[in-house]
Image 1 (cartoon, rainbow, N blue to C red):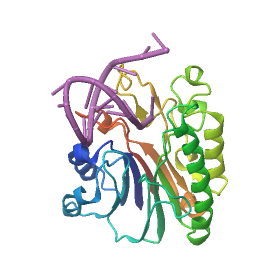
Image 2: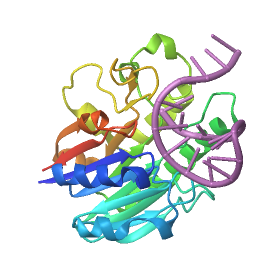
Image 3: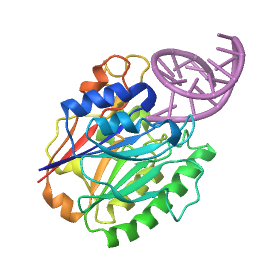
Image 4: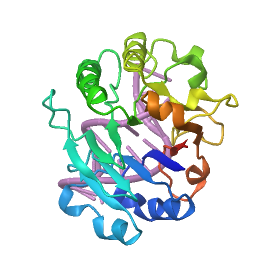
Length: 255
DNA sequence: ATGGCGCCCATTGGGCGA
């Protein structure tokens, strides 16, 4: 039995104690992190290794930054999409225990009128094209991270208030469906789930307490991994801790 | 229409996230 997880930590500098605590409570095999917001020279590799994890990371100052933590050795690390020149550090991929793990922090987009929205759509196009190759080369592939896309209305606390907006707009959702077209399966939706389960809540206006959230963090699995998957849950516990990330971890159980 | 909160860099305000 294996567990793989993803968590946007919104600054690993601030959240390192929580990541270590969470790993102590949830000793997953693989944890993909987004928004580490650290240059590589400041990455807390020693502390993470002391907790029994191998680590690979790709960061920058202030923004973005991704990492993969693993109980098992990490090989064949790729940073960024080789098909898309990007100054922002948003992708790290690696082979772990026969699985290809792709950790992605998909651009937010800001608003439909923003240049960042165009960047988001182009970035997603390039991700799709690269993943097509990756999936061919690595039958056991997991794409996990912060997608900044709520795939369906049931992934939004108040769909009527969000119609057409960034995170739910039809072009973004189409890009998500296009990723599913690579024979990838949304692990969360493989199972019966209660309504109104989300992975992100705004810090403001009591977003978490009122459960005004969105499900924008996802684990997509290729056919052999989907066939092995027995559960997928969102762990709301760390969102209740002091000084939390605004995202909760998503965990898939394999085998 | 704007800001709310939290983090970051670098001042005491502004950018950004989602």
